[in-house]
Image 1: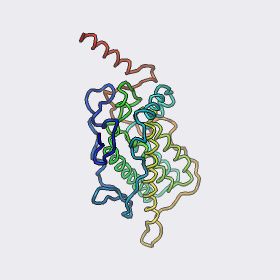
Image 2: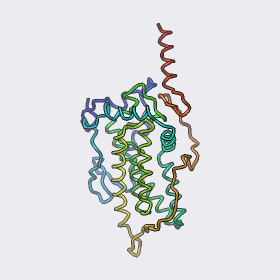
Image 3: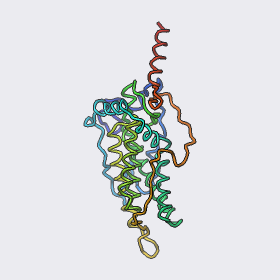
Image 4: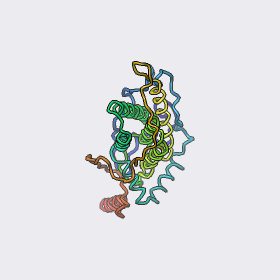
Length: 308
């Protein structure tokens, strides 16, 4: 089976052609055209390929999902082993980063840095605008690749796989959370270099949380981080060259190593999540010691018996 216009051999079956575990209907895609949306820093050529802010073709730093990535074997085995040995602490991490869109956790980080460094209103607006604009571009690239490649989710390859959270309605590779996290890490490090180590920790925790959730393969997260960091660096390179009317560099890098605790922990949303999260796929609820998978199997068994 060929995988879309790229013509790679997709031995898995496309994301759009496989139901999630516990569901009979095929997944309805979430914003499948988001990969074509306008970008703030990156550009596109007439063929839709991504260009850097200077108009040069970008060689995206992400592995092509051909046969060199063993999704059905090694990658899926790691997901299953992770869920089999999941701890309450990892569930806490998974649910924290998995609540709402990824900007929900990164925006409070930006806001806290702005507060602690007592940044002026104009510079605060620039930092927020630049970072959020960069995250938009990172998401556009991620969505373009997701729907170009259509790599299935773990619970599409194992129909008994119960996840910690609802599996998002878009393809697996690369992880959108990881791409956003990598970009956020690089861009915030540009403005706040003393916090580079902590920002890297947050980015890596955000990425691995998707493995803890059971909704992503490890390679989705690893390659997503790498891609997001590349996009962040391209944007930072552009920001560094921007000048004001006196031809002076606009940005100030805040180099004082001020004491600031960037969340998490605690693993409680800085801004309460008011949305609803419902799904019909299999959900693991090990925190309370129960499994929706077990319930689903019991129901399926009863239905089968009644039919007989």
